Amino acid sequence: MKSSELFERAKRLMPGGVSSPVRAIRPYPFYVTGAGGAYLRTADGEELVDCCLGYGPLILGHAPDVVRDAIEAQLAGGWLYGTPCPGEVALAERIAADHPSIEMVRFVSSGSEATMAAIRLARAATGRQDIVKIEGGFHGAHDAVLVKAGSGATTMGVPDSAGVVADLVAHTRQAAYNDPEALDAVLSSSEEIAALIIEPVMGNIGPILPKPGYLQEVRAITRDHDVLLIFDEVITGYRLGIGGAQVRYGVTPDLTTLGKIIGGGLPVGAFGGRRDLMEMIAPRGPVYQAGTFSGNPLTMAAGAAALGWLHDNLEIYSRFEKGTQTIGEACAGAGGSFVRLGSMFKYFFRPTAPANYTEAKESDTEAFRVFWEKMLRKGIFVPPSQFETNFLSAAHTDEIIEHIADAYSTCLSE
Ligand SMILES: *Cc1c(COP(=O)(O)O)cnc(C)c1O
Image (cartoon, rainbow, N blue to C red; front, side, top):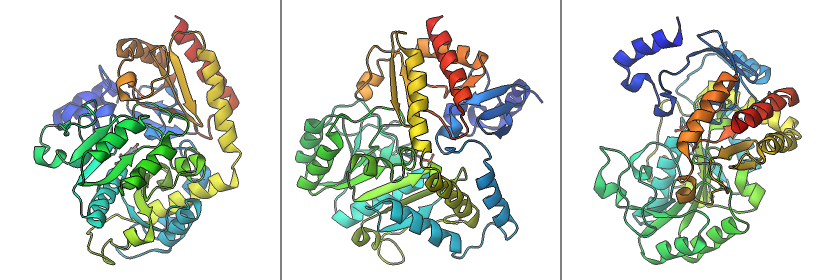
């Protein structure tokens, strides 16, 4: 059945015809029936180079042998026990070894769950109610973090979704990215702030990169104000290298949230950090957190296989740098700005690289839409939003990267 027909059926039963809003491409999304390596196969018989990669988890590409073998080996033994399994111990050891800041970890089933629990823990540990997030930062789809970005640094939060309790998001404050003074001002304005939650490299409106020294200043300012620092590394964890942004930039948060890559492409999340904080989590401590699918053996096996492969193939990270550099060179002179870091990249339809949410929002989204359609006609799927990061995977060969670079060059110059 063709995508258009599937979407007609889906629309009758599913809001907007989709299971997550960003997938609602107009006039209808393409349906994917299979995937391998760097490619998606659609219900309409097309083969597309995938630069979306499930919005980040698929750092090894689609259906890599190493992860598939691990999943198959676990499948034979069942995939949900409702008890601890050896795989969760192994994955916890790996994650703790890779992140000096993570002394203990709790697995959950999504990045949203991880940030929700980390915020609850920060509130419990400090006895304070407010949190600060960065304007434009995305931490999942739960109430406390669905706050309209773009409001002034010190103003109270305004809900970004209908149905969110105003009293709750009044406890979520905002500060602009790359602006240490604004952060200091927000933290100085109140004694009630438990934590700052921040994507160290903004991945959900970008990438937007930290200015030199910014993350170090964030660490110093939060420490001065005795406010916990939560790095949301759901995208950047294992994406920017082993140990994520915190190792790359040499900054130690109090708590870290992970997801995406650590599940090898299966649903996952995790949060971890200082032992004294993590020991407040139930059943060890008074902060309740639980989940039917948490630490399930299939995800643990897939995650361990993917992370093991990255450890065995560390040169992949320099190959990623070269790959996004090649694409960036192809975009030179097109009038916009190309931002890259490791395997994360994005072409912004604005003359200079944005430093924060307000600047990113100045991009020409109509120009992006035209560009996006041209790329699709050239057989390349980039995320259908000016504000979502593009990714490369280990399955993107030099030849495929040349093909992507050519497409960027052609579609931007037309
Ligand atoms: C994707 C993402 C989340 C949410 O993760 P889900 O698994 O979709 O719930 C949270 N934070 C960041 C930085 C993300 O990129």
